[in-house]
Image 1 (spheres, one colour):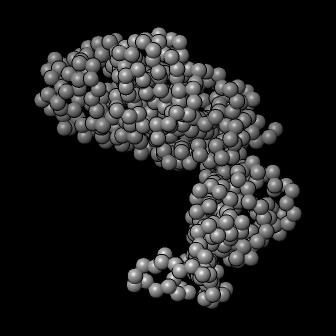
Image 2 (tube, rainbow, N blue to C red):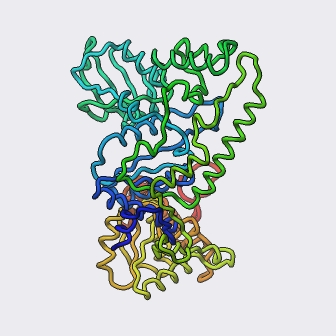
Image 3 (cartoon, helix red, strand yellow):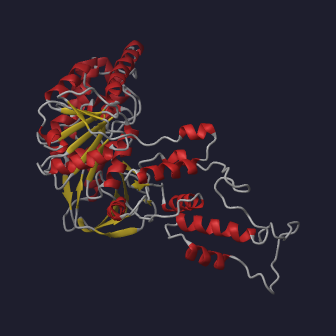
Length: 536
């Protein structure tokens, strides 16, 4: 039985040891593929939003065929007077809607401890709120605008973010949750004549679409039923004197008020958790840092609630908090949810051998911090490490943040003696070349998903030759301007996504430099024109 089969068939939670942070996206991609074979998904619970987003980005890099869904937490504090951003709520609702159907191919759901410990709308409520709009359908524009307003959309002059809409004559622009681009609805009377995607940054049309699924932009809805439910429960909970509170008056008028999302249990008949949206075939992993993150989360919820209770008065406008268990999971409920189904723990550290411990045997990335503190040239240390791995029969892949940084990094390594290898564009190209390589070789994918920590490879003064600093070749008095132009041409080509190399540099330098023979070059007064100064 392979490690993947053992994880999928485990009836009890396992501890997956020796799985460094850089390896976890790779592991998640493999488990998502394996779960898809059994018609399931992989759910990964990260410690915080940054870890969740890093995992999602890295998983897309290693497995482009993977469908990656993110379920973030509200980007506001518990019992806050501010509402979560429309981007966060739209992303949450889009993920909940995607979980209602059967997976098509491998699916990874990345979330956080804060997100899974908060109650959400029920699966039935999510399916009830979905609407399908397509060309040819008839809908009154005023009724559509009222529906968007009730579903949490914000009316603006220009649509730039998810959860916004704009009405301009016969055109209705909106950015629904779950859509990759904003949409422009062109009406002919009450009939939708066409639906086109457009780029929200420059408002340019991308192309037509056959239709789209309209999801709410907020979890707190303001339709007739929810307003009636909120009014009754608010009076029942806090008394008749609370009817003078701004939130009560705003909801009664059908207006949205900042912070109203924190009274979500009063709007809905009942709430459930993210686990209620998952199928029995779905596989769940949680990061080792989620243990302390959950403890800090429960402590923060209790602390914020206690502060609101102490500050509460009978005056209109006073903050009247709900009990923590109405909107958030309690610590006991969280432990019960973990015990009810196998939620495997992923840790980068080694664990003692046990029947519930699976050692993945992956070592962490090489850390070059000691060389930095000792003043050793970082690039020499990198090359020495690459050569040692090559002699051990291992293949090496070095990654960079972008095409431009890749070209610069490759040039610096070549100047220090590592001048062999292939420049590739993505991970798939890299793994295609690795089995065919002979001897210690290296490739440079475009993104930073690497076996070595790239931030540690900042340029350092070289001690190998005088006149070389920060990895730059020594200037010559004959043509220093050409040296500067070549480096700037390579940087421009890299940042623009164009291939940088001798041909690109020669073309860029030839286009930018003035002719040196026969023509007088104008210059700024007071600036010398000599071998160490570029012509203006």
